[in-house]
Image (cartoon, rainbow, N blue to C red):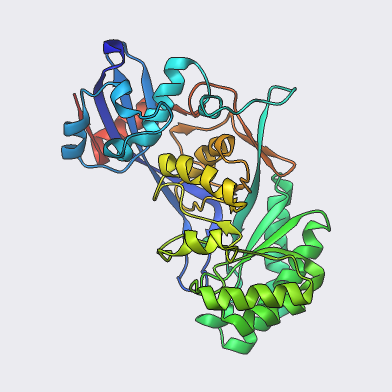
Length: 376
Ligand SMILES: [Mg+2]
């Protein structure tokens, strides 16, 4: 085990970009085109490296350097809380040392073609239409964006709704949401999955109206319809059942209620969406199987840090009711993710050690020098 002692921790930020600007959601302004991923790289005494998204200070890194890999894990698959800030790099390092993908360390098996395929969805359908006065043009724009995702290999699409919460007058915004949902369904065909995400911008009556007027579009889940509330969710569940609608309720990203898991266990929330970085991978490895046991679905939230596109797919190996990777398309110069591919609605997770990602040495070294640190 002494061989696995970590003698160096580097950290730096790599900027990247989405293929197009991301607009508003129900509560926030433009999300823009730029993304960023903060990458830690761990080097062992033997010169083996592990990389992963991390958020820590030089002082914290200083305290952790010198640790052995065995110290970081307990039981073997779960990173100890003290090392959470480096958990993604630690999982990569474990995979590099074992010469196995992280999903394989978690029990995941490639299919007969050698591919490990995990469902994913296109999360890029933001409110990019707010500058348009005409609903037809707005619907055509978002439908064309969905079509771009379809061409990229996606077969599931999440649409931001709640235009009437802040950015548009209530009635006009709600009408436009409904138009857009229908237009996206038409653009992606009957087989695709469509979800909507109100970022807490609806209320119960608006949810009922939107779902009633989009029955033909078959909305698979409604995400964060309003700030989660057990009584309102119970009411909505009854209404959905009475209407014969199978739309699921998804919630849990951001500042979720402390009662969210209890409500999930009670059947009031169907899909739990805690973030893949906060609380993180190790926490998900514990929580996912617990949710499985309750019959609750898992769909880790992730946005704006492309590392989550890749890491979330590995998590599927440990969570039976894993719904899909939230895919925020972006490229990050210096972070080579070319072994990942999307086709037919799934991420093809590479059968390579660790996360299957590589750093360009020159670009990363510059990032460490200019925006990060290295401790030995
Ligand atoms: Mg969301």
